[in-house]
Length: 510
Image 1 (tube, rainbow, N blue to C red):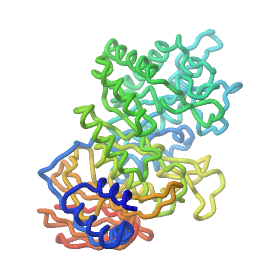
Image 2 (image 1 turned 90 degrees about the vertical axis):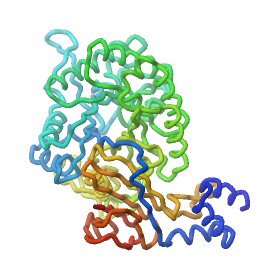
Image 3 (image 1 turned 90 degrees about the horizontal axis):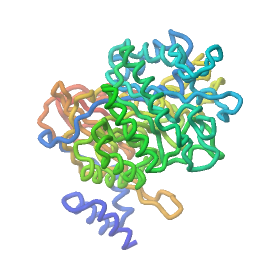
Image 4 (image 1 turned 120 degrees about the vertical axis):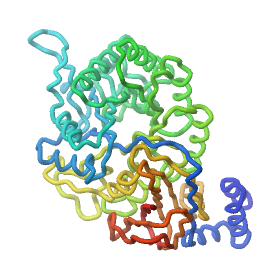
């Protein structure tokens, strides 16, 4: 226990907070501190003079659902919920450039996980050609979302090259684990294919700002698991491909940048892929953002602090995006406050620990099946859960988690200093992964373009009182918990408020 105490103290650091923890550990051991912190009153002090990253927006992927929406009324309602000022007001739309599929060989069984390609074989001409009337439902969903006026950034991304460019002849990955499925002689062909599609969307007037040709390169993609499109790339293969993209973007003088690349985790492999991209002069000149995915790091704040420190030292001046996250494995029902709090915790830590400039959920909509699940048994990971045929769909608690940030922290907001008397998420576990102690309070504060201050607090502990130290005089408190969704619970002069057990609170300060 002595060594464990020493490690925890090292994680807390020096200063007042470290002193408080040291006293708690000395008086009652590690368990004493965590018991204290779970319900302890807390103070958050805001410092508007200390600024960090400028935020560029919130988003989500239109993969794997937009191609399944066939009714225009449904498109209008979903777009209103996600991409209107009345709804979440998401300004980043991630459009999937599907790899297509040959029905006679494709192994993916779920139709939601397959996407019609613009590139097809014309039997009349006997040639491979582009038909931009294809993927019509997904295009109609994009057009509808754009009509609400909130989207300023469209990111075109691909999970796999077109299946004709792959070794296996399938967009669902190779036949062997951890082997690139992009044919050695098809690199240039993939670049031309992707940028031809990019030019189509640009000519159409779609605000394409970035392209992302590689998605989660370090994962196996293929072998025995073929649940979706995917393609593995070793570090040298990813570097070669992105270099070709950078050169061709310059040659075509296209007004888009690279998302380089979308790493599937925040571990050491992420740093190696990033290092390669940053060291390549052609790629560096075209990088719009480095991007990582927060999967499997939901309660690992320390790992994100380490990545944030590495980015500060090695990628200064380069924007960073958290471009995909959902709960994996999904153990919280769509109606559970735990689902909302887990998502909000991840958002808060990505904002404060790694300093991301944008944050996008994985899919905006996920399927729950053609039959309505029993109460408490819908484990969709989207912000909207839908039947396979969209005959019914509902917003989930994760939708409300996103709302606490996206509705009140617009693009152009700047993160400001915030410090607390309770240390953000600390978890102590046994060797077999069992959680022994946990105190979970996470928070992030921003100064908006309108000059207001927004503080979002995620309280996964017990009921506690919160005092906000600020020069502002008026506050509005919006709260989500087990019985409320985005309910305004207080408006008036700045005062101490109560955070209910397991609650999410957005505080608007004027």
